[in-house]
Length: 189
Image (cartoon, rainbow, N blue to C red; front, side):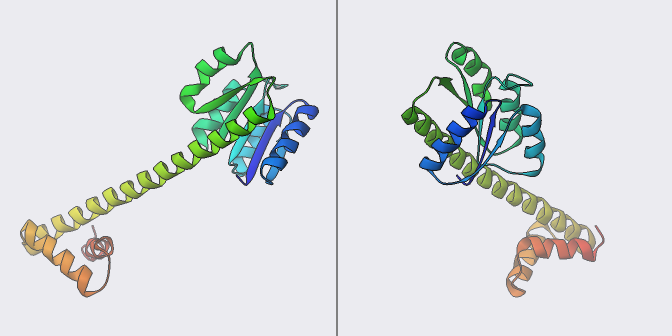
């Protein structure tokens, strides 16, 4: 956890969260006072964790937490009054937002941060795997298009086209994707 954004209309609460975070793990902490400022900061900066202390001066904070969870990879902790915790949790938990009721103790706060970090690491691992699979699918599509070009332009069978791409990849120490791109460029396709 390197970058943390604390969104709180209360300077006292901002100082409290900053002190807690510094004792847990020294990190770069930025504090803002409302949802509008948070949205502007998030356009240009990436954060590992975003802590929203509700209510904010310009909104409650629920919509902000949902927006951050949907559009960034940051873990989101929404701190709400105990009387609203269950109701708010129902609305935001499907977005992956953690809700922490106020008042809270240090131990509960630190456990929540640890859970946020663990779920964020898991999500990032799944995202990396998803990206890897998307790249593999794109490579397969590209190779299949190159095979079709070879079948159409050189009169090869599918297995011959496949073998030619594989052989060129081995002979020239290129990936199948690079060979497919070369073939498609060669025939302007």
